[in-house]
Length: 369
Image: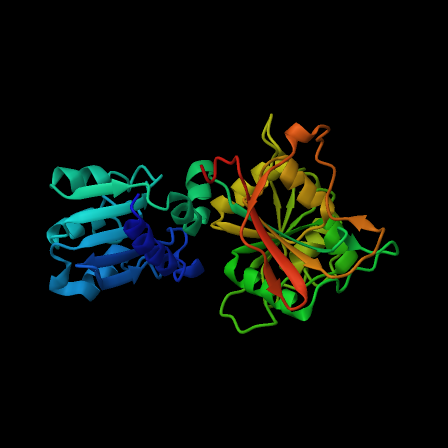
């Protein structure tokens, strides 16, 4: 990988991140066309059903695309879907060389590299592959595992407590951090909590601290169906609420009928033999079109997801406070020796208000490798 190719690919990655949630279930993809060391076209996939990144870049470049090099974060598609195949569009435009970040995991759309090579186009692959895959990580998890992507958000004091000994927890972090969490909600398809958090906090789980056209679906894992019909989450006048159980008999109980009378969707997700129930929950949400799930539950739900290796991204906000005791941030993971410790790769830390924000991903994960 040449430094020059890496630099241009990083520009394509930045373009890909401009796509946002409107591209789902498609991936975020960016493309930059370069001729004689100058960018002649740039594009990104802006919305599902709209032009792909390559088509946008080619349209911007016009005749300047002939003989140029295309830097694309994801292998150009090779099939007729809602839009024509990008591999053929690059060939028709006379692009001489295509540098690709990562291969397309979708068997329907893959094959663009082979098509380009057969047409005599030079193809280079694997440039900035990890960053390219992270740009489309929601898509990759869905394709590989047929489940929703899980972003786990946690907030704690510097000594690792999410609540004081008397149970008080609002607010540990600053208003600036809370605004960032609402931005995360606006980018998610669903916000997931457990029944314990629903009972303890009576949250709304909406986006209200910033202007947004998107509101997530509220999802509660509630096997015993404890959510009160008079709770904020049971108010579906403006937002949709989904409560998931695992016993069909619970689904015909008086509590279930009371919740349904308020518009709450009570659905049974059957456990899969030999698999974690939460994995079945995430597969169910994926089937319902919820590709990206923000988990804001407490330590129990967070620990269960971590133990089942179902967390794809971890965001932790540490407040500059000390409690000394209380509710621990980390749940028991069943790890007894250092060699079995879960390892994460973290982005550079960010300061948001007085708080420190860490974003990490598993180092050994089929989602990213």
